[in-house]
Amino acid sequence: MYEVRAKKHLGQHFLKDENIAARIAGSLSASAKQVLEVGPGTGMLTKYLLKQNFDKFVAVEVDRESAAFLRIHYPQLGDGLLEADILRMDFAGVFEGPFSVIGNFPYNISSQILFRVLENHEQVYEAVGMFQREVAVRIAAPPGKKDYGILSVLLQAWYDIEYLFTVDPAVFTPPPKVQSAVIRLQRNDRKELGCSEKMLLQVVKTAFNQRRKTLHNALKPLGDYNGEFAGKRAEQLSVEQFVSLTNVMQEIMAASNPE
Image (spheres, rainbow, N blue to C red):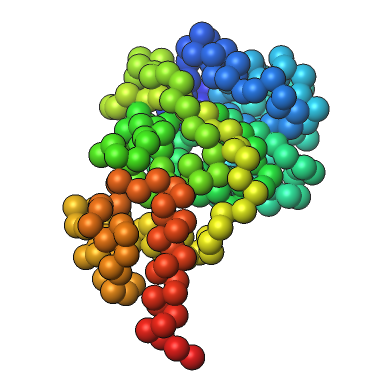
């Protein structure tokens, strides 16, 4: 019988629990019509997604061995199985209009997958994913929590995030050395950010780079900030406050570097 070896360099931990697979698949909103599964592996989650009769379902798998296994066991995927790298995939070339992303994400690229979601927030209206638990907690953390960080701010600018449930290592082959968790991101009502996205990324990264320092000190690489948040630390600011801060920092940087 054709078997797939989990490859460490791809961060593969194959899901083997039927109940967890069904629960993840059922976490997509009822309005999901076009769905992209990332890293289907041996198809445990794929099996439950195929039962949902989406208008369009695509599974993207970078591992040739897994792709060959899926072609044998899930021939109904047909052209919907793409051998490609999610980090280089042209989403607009695959889907017209909004779509959902779902998967048991490889832990070694889970943050990069989320940055791809961010880059395509106008098209990706929902994402349901399995992550290393500490990453999931960080993404869903509200302002004021020690886990609140760069990804929390950037993702929460565009998405409402829910921590759904924790997953034990025993449901995977091979079992990871950490606990896992499933979270759901759903696009919020924000149409415009209210500041430069590129500048927001720069400000947020700089602010959290020295998160123990007040923003007056942490932001010194960008400029001399003495505004209303100067005495606060990065983890204390909401998305809206970071947007305001970004606009102020842009003015400060422009004033100190006149053309």
